[in-house]
Image (cartoon, rainbow, N blue to C red; front, side, top):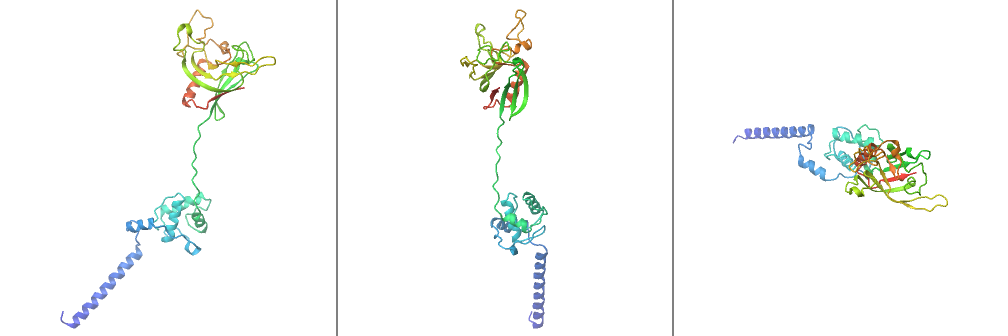
Length: 305
């Protein structure tokens, strides 16, 4: 273009087009600000760099859904510190509003999803440490309550954390004896007993001529020194059990030659014992099932009163 007039005209058109293009770009950015999706690198940088702490009310503007900027980043980071994880992208959207509402509810503030002065104050406070609640194992106890008027109509209960789960009729002693120090006749001494062991097949390995009197389902109790009556010496009661009358395999014997068999439950008369606690066969089996489900707690004890 050697013609000066044409060159001048072309330069004027070029400048006009450039200004128009730059103006259009600026308007587009103003109408559509960059989001985390448009600028992942910028969002990551904002997430990594902590927002400058707010120090005065001018830097703590009221924020709500649609707000943007550094103050929103500060809110998002404080919400994350208080346990409401958010991406610190500076955009107050639906997720940020939900986190603000949850935080407000947690701190007894009006749950309107708007960050005002009260919410700012709560957000800037140090987060409370999270207390981890460790569940404690349940405590199981066996409780034998003596019936002083009818020893063979006493009760044995299973308690869980002090509350009765189940209760059975139980007997102890013979001939209505209430003397704790009479071996093989007196009933079980009062006090607390350790549980020494349990089995569902006591006597299974014994020879026929050496079978124990107590067989089958048996809970073994620790020895106990009795409380003597005046003029009587205290003795150490041994061979104490919670048991029934059955065979070593837990079944009932059948014999027409024995009027009262130790291997067969004939009725209420079988609640008498040589100082142990006696239950019906179905009751002691039910007790075992319940303790099996509880895992036979290591702290299981028997309380006798």
